[in-house]
Length: 534
Image 1 (cartoon, rainbow, N blue to C red):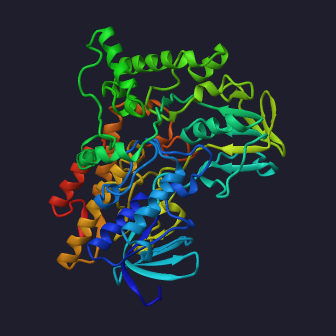
Image 2 (image 1 turned 30 degrees about the horizontal axis):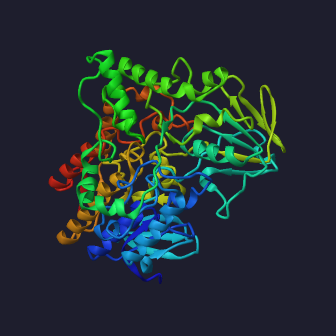
Image 3 (image 1 turned 135 degrees about the vertical axis):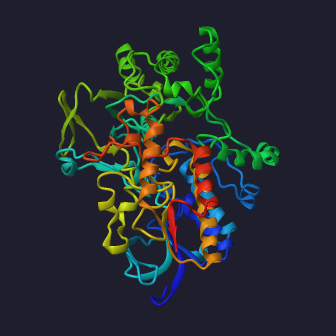
């Protein structure tokens, strides 16, 4: 793109939000172009290609609601693997004719707002200079990997990769001594894959994961075609639920039921599989200690018979729950607990034997060294805007986003920040993101922003900026909601506890998609209240 050109919007990121935003803007007649550092489409599904990587939101809700896409596309599994999601992205971009408006293998390195012209000046990793009216960051909440500062990690001579920085050519575990640090969603998937092939697998666990049975299913085209007449209703319902699924929390009484009735209710929810036992459970479980304890006891009773060694069971499913059930991201598993019955698998409890340092040949805990050929870092992400902050962003009057957010996140509606006019972000901090099914949350934001930019164009307006009082009110609103729940009782990335030195705060909007959508629409109806439009 020549330096002299100025387009309506530069979009950063080729995941669901970036592709959908590009589609809606092009459909609305805007000149928009998308950039991504990856060599292929898919967003996180480009970077997360480790063995076992797959979606934990089920089909059909895990896809865009664009009719021409779902009518022609069929999945092969209820919870698709990363490779199939990549295929879906290629299909979507081709079907929507978006390829001419996408540049891959090009990172946006810096962007500065030109106050005199109401434009963003953007630079790429290839040295290009771009100008655009709007800068839209679709970098998501899980695009900046976090690796703890383990002493000696740089000395390790084997293969060492974070799950989000996996070699695109793959890496075989066959016959290798594999170590996995972490017990979150990515780690669980890697562990299940490595246990099948590795000569030895060592799992370094700090906190047990209350993982739920995925209940994976193969899907055939005929079954999906029979269901597609209901897809519009199913996909529209995502905006009316907390988590962006076709099911929702049960708002009815729980603890006032008899013990037998409670057991029957929990059994029915458990039988649905996937994330039903989390965001399809009774809402009381998330706010009431007694209800939460009962849900944990039920989960533990279901899990214990799958673990043969009592000592192992005490670490994986302890008598005393390490945190309230559901206040850390519940992962889905396929035979995860049976892995620890295998002779080639060792579980290291980092609560009792913490990691001291890493050597050329392995990991040393307080109990001794574990020699390894491959070290997998399933250690999570800087989800509090870390992906956005990898870009050097300068707003009006020299304001820098990293400095503005140093003492806490500041957004309005989880989409914009004061002092950064004409800049928006999707599926990021203080939006429903980490509490929700991705496409369901993303479409609410993208549709709102597309309507906003159409309004700006129709009114002949060139600048929109979040107001600081609105930012303050939004942050207080997020805190007020989360403090009514049990989430603050857990040390989790939801509360930004995983990044040393970060202020403790809820980084996702905790009111759910339905409430979030209502507040976004209210702002629009009020002429975009909380924003200065000029």
